[in-house]
Length: 378
Image 1: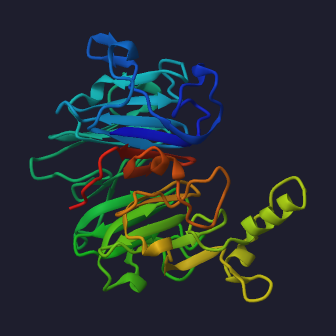
Image 2 (image 1 turned 180 degrees about the vertical axis):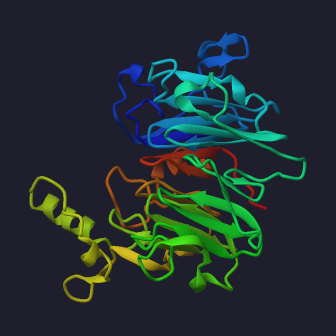
């Protein structure tokens, strides 16, 4: 079982830039190497360990960093690679001693948050050896996956704790660039925050200060939610994929006018990228020539028509891309070196005889957990 990464590698968060042969863009999946960092008082090099990340590790990613949550030993800890201020080496993997014993982790561009059996703590990544900037005490009954916390949720910016209505019993929370998507224990989806690109799914581009149920999905029990930069995705209990929000880069898997224009320019031999539509143009469903319809903003959840009637089990969102894992084939919803508004199969894993188990998106990259053995989602 191994983790693979592809996409933006500007800070060495997928493959250390010191390797030389790998540049800013990783166009094909690369197996992630085992951490080269100090754990406890002993420095362990890759030569003394397995070359790949061991099973039991989980990935958390942002635009410039990769956080690896090690849970295989029962005594969890977090290592960070990519842009880390201390030590000032973009190719280094930094072990965070304060996270020893943690159960979960949440990383942002500036702050790292970790949960333990009795507390949640948050540190400034620029000073990981300093005391936490925020802390919350927990009881033994307060077990929840970050960013959820008792009575609310942890946030990777100030204020670090934000309350939720006691009437909402949350089981899953996904944070986008400026909006949030929550899944309650009864399968209801709530959204709030910035709505400028239809990412809240309420049929408008208005913002919402408090959690509001997405009416279009009411009565359809959902099993998971994810939030991208300005788009949202959820999976129904039956494995259907619903998408809404901004589609400028085809991240919803719906026809994109800007990508069509870009393709036309490319085929004509013209340089440069297509112009992003204005807000007024984007707020409307746009029709192309003939009967073809383009979507810039999908303000209501839309059921995505996937090839071969695929049943989705896992998904994740980056800033402007979406990846999904199917039950039967372990394929991803997006995997081309250029933007696409069509769900595409990442053929690497099939050719290598691997079955995809999980997927995690950073802002501009994707990380995949794959195994040689067929998985069970029971």
